[in-house]
Length: 370
Image (cartoon, rainbow, N blue to C red):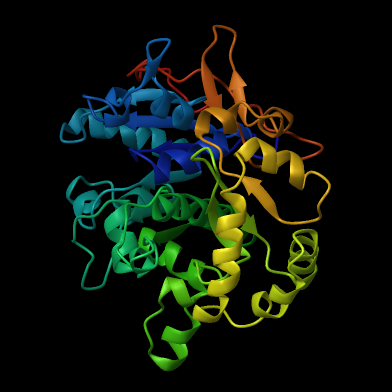
């Protein structure tokens, strides 16, 4: 597998770090999850299946667990022994905590100069917000995303995706893999300062233009990708369900409006987003309200239009698409984990459905990262 022989010591908890190291474990890396004595808090976050949190199992499958009290000199020395063998170290403390615990980059790289040290934090290791407490939604708010994650009245709503958490996990993975390649040339490791904030900011490249260029706040109802276009929009159906039209290309506009006998609206829909598109939005809203969702699924089947039904998670995980892509995996005892999104032809992922019990792999004199 791609990451066979790569050894990772992961002190991170919750989402970004564990997600990143789970992706590495799926592709052959040896991942030692070093937990506090009480364990990763996600172990206790339901719902539970086969005696384990779904959250914890999905993000920690295929790893080993060691519980250490890093304030104990003897247990800190045990961590140092693992560092001697490691390729990658991951931590997600607030800035300054790693140094206080004597697991900072300077300390660990003196033990192993080839170590790739990855820090994941909300706002990075420097800057005015470096010590500000934050989980995902607070980072999204500071990055501007909550202002366009709003309802039809412009009121921000709780986001459905932990975007800054997951952006950080992907950014961290990319950075670690770059560092592994770079180490092959230089022979030494490096330090990565990964901020959830930094990771999320570039995701607005296609929507934040007016703010960057003209200093004008972006309003979602005036933006083509955020709710101001008839062909990038959510519509209710007669049975209280919803569908989306999610493709703005002219061919899709022509295909749908011709099928609905409203070619007069084509020019509106391929024009500027905003208030001028209201007649088309109103027409499509009244049209889709005339029939239930199942009717529209069947109706769209032979139309070349970017249409999709809005599925709940039960429907999504039970879909033929999810099965075909192996995105929900069932273990021998009926336990489930979410599958791997990284799919190689020659060396596919090997996704375990087993997550470790707390301290299942307690350090002994013979413990090695293998």
